[in-house]
View 1: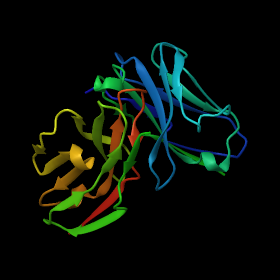
View 2: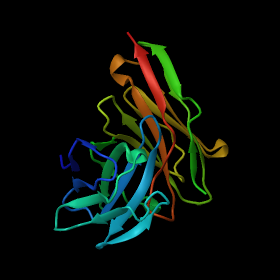
View 3: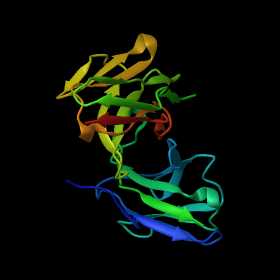
View 4: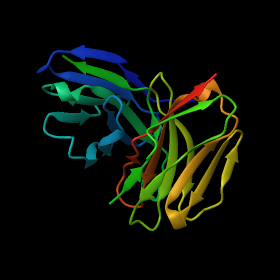
Length: 117
Length: 114
């Protein structure tokens, strides 16, 4: 069964360092997302991406964050200068269709745990 | 505004007991979709079910059942004859007819005691 894969599964970094989290969405999917879950809290939307551009982003997704689809398979989330409060589990997700109207179904990866020291 | 409330933070039950996880939602969209996801200790999010707003028929899948009531804006999840493997955090989520994101509740941590 096709799945969303994420690397690394766990990354530890020093505050102020740049981090790139990588995702390989399901191959025929067109919409890509990043969600974040701070330990013990709810899953929060960061950004959605379609047709090589951001289609929606939340207040959390400030100038420190960026996303990119550098080739036909990878989808990356970059945090330019990490802060302690960026420590969280980051989930990549993809869908074949738009979620609005219920046409799409969201498939999540297993998450990348980021620890900022 | 879209909002999902899971008032139960933690629930513990003894194996074989039935347990119901509550979910209450708010939305102004006339068409919307509700979901339940399971997050086991390993951390991944596992899709359980999707319901659309114009289908209030309850659904049963093995030991799992879902009760969708538009009148009370609730989408509750019942596990019958719980098992230790059901121990996880369960999230209810909402997707509206506008925008392209999910809104998650804060989750209910279920512990099934052998």
